[in-house]
Every structure is written in structure tokens, then in C-alpha cells.
Length: 462
Image 1 (tube, rainbow, N blue to C red):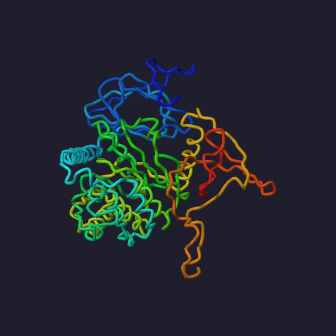
Image 2: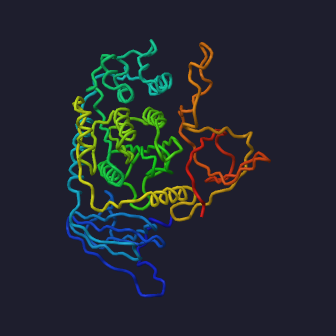
Image 3: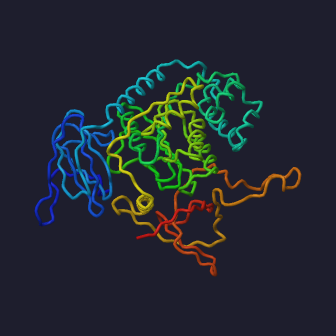
């Protein structure tokens, strides 16, 4: 790709005076940059050491940052940065929360090492197969109170190793029913980052992931922010493994993502089911970082508590709001293995209004089809109505079970989504008379499935 590409020589200039300039950073300072909306920015490290969101910059290598990107270059010991191009704004800051952030990483690293060295309390013959656990979750659907209807062939002692999966739906009461101590499942470190809108949750998550990957861990990143989306397009709940520090330009890797499509940017009660499906499908790792939505009041707060309980998070990092931190500490005080930590919001966080957020969602969708540097070529295709089955999460009112004949079950549960999506298409035209749709797809050829999930996302291709 053009962005992120490295070049050893000086950047080309366009005939006018050179726009190259240098910025010297003192130790524990950062250069905060907002790239111009029209042109990219080239940047390189001349001397010293520096990093972008936890990923070190290689010296003397030009990096090209795309338009509209906002980022910061931080140095622990001092550095000289060279830039070529225009910016909306760039300035240096000597007051940052980076020391507190890296201290959190150090504590998490110590806990991961202790968890890795802890001997297992059960032999391999008692390990339940992951498919059995997933089958158990699918059987009870979203009614977690029915979780105790376990097959006779699955003994409670066999759930010991699989407890990391089941505890996310069971809670402590479930462990009591199964006579298994919840402390036995604490060999995994699940960090969830919470806070209001524009508090720096995605940035902190990225830093913790990159620092963990630098220490040879392979953390899993789970993104529950349906409004923006750090892994794929908005309206999704997604997860992906991080095997190396995140590229400062291209962002989260997309080689092996697990994606569930909710289809809306505003959460509702139906998003709980998508939470649960993602939770039971993501492989449990010693290191996991979970990013959350910025809606922290009313239903948003209830969804946040449900996410903490569903994923059985044991470290909660609260950014930028003392009230939320106090509320979570009060609610979770009966869980001795859960730590709630308040962290300072970075002064470099940029507040965005609804219009700016809508534009950001449009750019994310365009990036999916055309690439970060417009180096991808999507294809337009036509399909018949009869070739497709269209569903929607929370599509409308449903008849209650009491309205069905005695003993009858609903033919389908439109809120039950149990499969990873294969990709996304954009509907450009619907021909009612010919019963055909025209759509834009990332690649040519037939669709991998006839089942489509419709969302309420809008995008005007430009």
C-alpha cells in the first residue's frame, strides 16, 4: 500500500518551496498532529527514539499518514522528528498521561507472567472441548437463567478449564451452582477500557495491545464500539489477534478478524445477543483488551455492566470520568477479583460533534471498499431477489410466545446471530419490477452466502 510505505531518500517536492520542517522533542513529551483533510503527511524519526500509540518508529524511514488522521508521536528520552506536508494543527505537549499508562502496562505484564507460571489445577483429560461449550451456549440462547440445563455427559468438573468461557455468561452465582470457585478461572487477564465519548479509549487500547505484543504476547483485541469501529466498518462487534505492535499508519491488522454485524450505530437491547455471541466465540487468551462504547448513561450504562459481566473482565480502566469510576466501584465491590482503575484522559483527545462522527463513519466504510490509499477496486454486481435471504437484527415487533399454539416454538429467532460475517456489500440500486438488486462488493464473483443481514448504516459513495 502507498500509505505506510517506507522510503530511504527525501520525499519528493512539488516544484515550490520545501515544506520540510523539524521538531525537537524533549524527554516524556509528544508531538500532537492532525493531518490536513486534503493531503497526506510524511514523517520520519531523525534521531532518538519515539513511538506512535505504543509502536516504535524506525529511524530514517519515511511514513506517510493519510488525510484527516489524528495521532501523537511520543518520546521517552528525546527525539527529533522531521515532517513534510501540511497539517490542520501540530504542537508539542509536555503534560501527558503516558507514565500512568505505561505503569498500567507494567502491572498487567507482571500479572500475565504470574498467570503463565501458575500450574494448572486439572489434568488435560478434564478439559472440555470448545465446541461443547459453544453448543451449550447455543442451546440456551439468550436466556442465561437456563444455563443450568447441562447435558448429563458434561460433568461440572470438566468445566474447570472451560470456565473462562462459561463464567462470562454465568456470573458468580453460576459458579456456586456448579460448585466451582470463580478464583479458579482467573488465570486469564481481561482488560476492559471504559469511559465517555472522546476520552481516548481506542488509543489506550491500542497502546496496551502494542506494548503487550512487544513483550512477545499475542493479545486479543475485542471492539464493542459499534458507533465507530476500530477493526472494521461501524455497526459491528469484532475481535482479532494482535501478533505484533500495531502499524502506526495502517492500524489494526485484518488477517483473522471475527466480526458480528449488528447493523446499527445506536445500541439497543438486541446488542446484548451480539455481545454474547462474540463472547462465546472469541478464543480465551492470557491477554485480552476490550474497547467499549462511549454511551455511559441509561441503557448505555446497563450495556456496559453487561459487557463487563459477559466477558468476566477483571481489570476495568476508566478514562476521564470520576462519576463512572465511582459507580463501577460501588456495583463491583462484591467481586474481589475485579480491579477498577481511574486514569487521566490525554489532553490531546479531540472532541467530535455528531456531524464529524458521521463523516468518520463514512470514511471507514469507504476505506473498506477502496482501501486506505484508494488502491483497491470494488466490483458492481447484480443479483435476483430469489437468490438472497435478507435479515435484520431487531427488525421489528414480534408476536409473543403466548400467541403461538400450545407447544409451538417460533420458526426463527431473528436476534440469534451465531456466525462470523464473510464481508460487506453496499446496495446501490433496487429494481422492484425486475426483482433485482445492484450492489458493490470488495471483489468479483458470487457472494459466499445467500444470507444477508441488513443494517441502517447509510453511505453516499463519492
